[in-house]
Image (tube, rainbow, N blue to C red):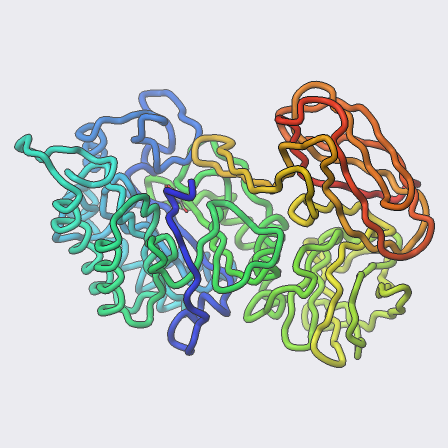
Length: 565
Ligand code: FHN
């Protein structure tokens, strides 16, 4: 997969207000995948294909021949497309700019292109250029605007990567033919004809030679000196890093980066896909991205008629209403000094203020914050613009905040902590005395086994990833450092994948050892191991070992601690 996404390095920290500011400070954007494929919505000749809809032409989906696919243009008539409504939706959602597919891998230009008549004006009965309307609607709403452009893959133009290898006359076509006749002129068009652009979002560079990427980047620099170029341009020529599709990182990431994600599990409209991210899940993922130091770009896939699936819109509007109440949590906010999420939520920072977004409201009336070293000046529970003081005390390096029994907000409640100085934190994971604590393998020190990231497609194009400990040798250990406030018994469980019955050991280093046999599954699943005891407050190392079973298939994702009560 890395090969397809290309090498993307981080070069730029937005150095002035004009370039990259919406990316750097806005932290939230709308991605739109819309094209001829949206008409099919993943159903071809009555058969449904499951996966990312914009790949429907590919042999791993419906395998539609080029000429047949091109015929779809004759029926593309998106009468319900409403640029103003889409821009308003993005604005109401709290997003700061829109990036839309000007041409995806299948080669159809969703704008009026002089370079190739396989485009929305020349090839469809609708014969309109939606991008002018959308660019204008974005400007009217005060939003930035930009284009996705598939520069390497073009499945219908001779010479494009994965495209026809001969031209209409049967002569061999090269990538250079495609690049000179279509790709370069089209990038010239999209960067010249739609006013100021925020980002040109190139995708899947694969093995595209550097000389081509350089020419495209030069065109963007010439026509749009204030635009950013996505890291997926390739060869490290982009301005920032895009993480893997649908990946929200668990650890802080340095530099300028984004996560790209979608409101359900497909980028383009898929008729069957009603698995929408709820408003709370959208906020969880957005705040996780901001908390890890990045930007979140969340996709919608309008239908072939141009309308936006209502449930996607609903989730965006409801999460957007929350962002309007708590803009300080998201915009121009910085990464969490804890460098990871906490059991009840996440933290973002502005200067000396911490914003604690509480997703799981503690039933016991206390919120436990481990490791804060800077003195607190004040703590408040926010309710929109109003607030009430929160009592707090400290013990053994923990801060304990007193909270009302019921969360004031339906989705996510926010506590603002003003510090007496710059935030300083010991990021060691705390074992929460009240709610369960999961610590991912990403945070383990591993000896005698491997720790690496694994990616897979759940459905075609639906990417998932974990960091896992695997290839266990006899004495291997994955060790987690934890800070304990309340001594006592905790139930330990492990989330792992594997085959057959497996025996795992858990040791409190210098203390108790437990081990147990449990089942396993090829999917990651949580299995209880047993109780362990932390005799007093303090820091402990907890080591996981793999004792029996197939070590080649045993894959540890995380350890969990829950108070035994
Ligand atoms: O192949 C594309 C895919 O269709 C989609 O556009 C995503 C969005 O990030 N990018 C590529 C795969 O990474």
